Amino acid sequence: QGDFSSSVRDAGPQTHRFEGHRNVETFLKECKFVCGGEFVATGSDCGRLFVYCRRTGEVVRAIHCDGSVVNGLAVHPLLPKVVVCGIDSDVKVLDLWDETQPPPTEGEMVRMRDRAPPPLAFRHSRGRRSTPVTVAEAEEVLSRVAAMRERGHGHFRAGKWDSADAEYKECVEVLESGGPTREWGDKASEVSTMCLLNRGLCKLKLKEWEEAVRLCSMVLKVKEGNPKALYRRAQALMQLQEYDRAKDDISELERVSKEDEALAKRLMVDWHKGKDALKVKESKIFKKMFS
Image (cartoon, rainbow, N blue to C red):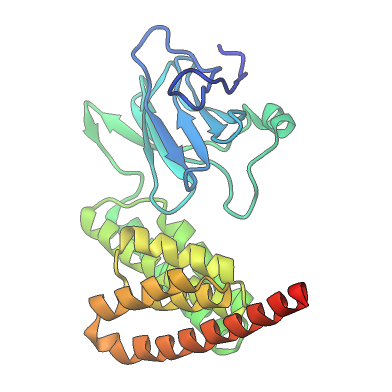
């Protein structure tokens, strides 16, 4: 059923080769980059989804997903989740791993290979798709998420930014369970975006600049030109002294939202102050080096 081994070889124009999965009885499976492009996922005739480290070619997960074969693969745009399908009469949503945890080592992978949590399955009946929740249950989920958001707002107002961030994060995770209608999905997507923006603001308050950049970038992947995401990412980038990237976000903010021109101008003032301070600091360092 595959030896779960992999290697990286030079083969003309190829840069990496990922091995261990099987394509014997059916056609070549889909391959997708996952988790920000750091990993590669593909299905197999052994019924498993294989996840490889893009840089080393090592297998980091081999998740049993289907009784026969995993053919189809789609990647969530924000979270470390994928959707797979095969010969079984269902479509499964899988957590690759918790976003707070690093990918497993090779030794850990061997131990956890066949112990992945049960996937969320969308069952089919006579070729027609049915959802795992009713309309009433889906609305109850939105109500529960609204209550969690309010708790998050309360923690934020109290200056408990870690607690607020935890509430907003749970909101996003709960909404990933899916719903019965397109309208519900649109509502869930809107709420998830707001929660991600709130998480970005929490990270700014906590001075976790890299995380603030990451969360705002997640929003901008699906909501291009979102003013709040641009504004908060620019703030974080300036703290990281990535002034060129910050200036790009400020310029984009001016372009997409005339209502936020005053905010953009205020950011540019901070940008010039930070840039000038960095030049002075670098000048002093160079003087010491050559004195």
